[in-house]
Image (cartoon, rainbow over all chains, first blue to last red; front, side, top):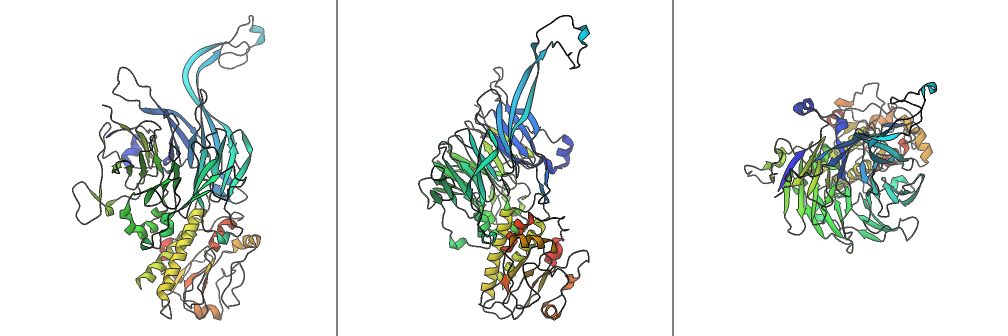
Length: 443
Length: 190
């Protein structure tokens, strides 16, 4: 049972009433930080908006902490590569938080080519009483200075500032699809279609290539890397997924270049389901380690699979996200929806997994009870503080009252990006240019 | 014949998408191009499998494309021939790449990596192979590139992977991307 609070304020009421959405406002990534206190979103316009959870107030214990805007900054700008005559989009592909080590917050944000480390810090005091300049900053006439004083820190309105501390650029020929911070908190990887590069957070002019699957002759290319992630506890282990539906686990201690995997996860294709589009729908769009580090979850177009790291030949569990689309692959191919890259996410205890679908639906699967639910993120269908009603898509001929038929699904409303609070049952769901935050009902 | 019609349609749509993706902001996406290439191959294989018992392909289809690829079949003798020509701008990249797109026809006019045949091909060979449909009249501001499904005695060939080479080559491309051709026209031409 969940209640809703919509907190994204970028669209003003005019846009909301007329249902316009500027493309720059389309959310392209969402991520909670490791404590769950902050939630970051990136959009197509290169901006990052960080939300902070309000402290729970004693006067209103029923009102759980809501998320309000904490900081907004322009992370990436559009660039032009003159040599290749290519425009580099400013869209934020991924945001990853660094665990908090002092009063400031750090996050990595990336577009297609450049990763940046941002420091978000608060300033609530400022020095006053300088000797040589007045409060406006103008230099004082030295002749008027008759005494010496020590500047004092005075309180001021809270200001949150974001500064770019590192820029990691010029290491990727192809488009970056993912970044992942190592558990050692000193290194991170950035991944494009053909290569994985390892960086030290302190060093921006050098990175190490640890996976390179580019063939000598590009005509022989058969698969690309779609996502990579470090193991949550083992700092020497990472996994990367491919467009062919396989996952490779690599150990960085084996060799400097991790082209040889130490584990290879792939499920043989079922020949009875073969179609023109088999290759497209088996391409993995997201890979995530479980919090306990024992499982891997992958998302392809129609399913979510949970893999046991000890078992390579088939997944432990397979969940159908929207199997009713299997018969519609041709139309989805023509309208480009078949290329959509859905993400998937674990809850804090690794017992529930969640992923998005079309029509602003998102699905949750409980791994223990084997129950699943379809929910909808939309303003029309849910009021703030209301409990979300489970939705159902009807496949057969007879449609019940509350069901939606497959043909009435709105494929322009897709939920590609979702994130789950690390400890609590709070989820953030991005529906085009709107952010929905759902919390468990308090009782 | 439904499989072959669907296969053909899928190939046409794939080529259209590959073509229009070159004008996309942010440059060619390798993953997407690869998937489209795989779909085309899949469709091509299914098409040939459906066509194998028959001797000739009756349909003709024309398209304007940016990518260079020619469809090939093995010696099994299927008659499908889909040609797509490169624009002249890709010339320098091909040289840089060093491995020419293969050429398969016996026709001497088709030579080399580069198809300089963006000029309207004339000559007897063209006349015998070309099928002009209603949509065949091109505006003259567009380069003259055609992809056609034809019947012909020569073993047709496909190198779909050259589309990917094109992606790599695009990186050294100089000059503005071409005006995209409306996709409706591409589909209508079939």
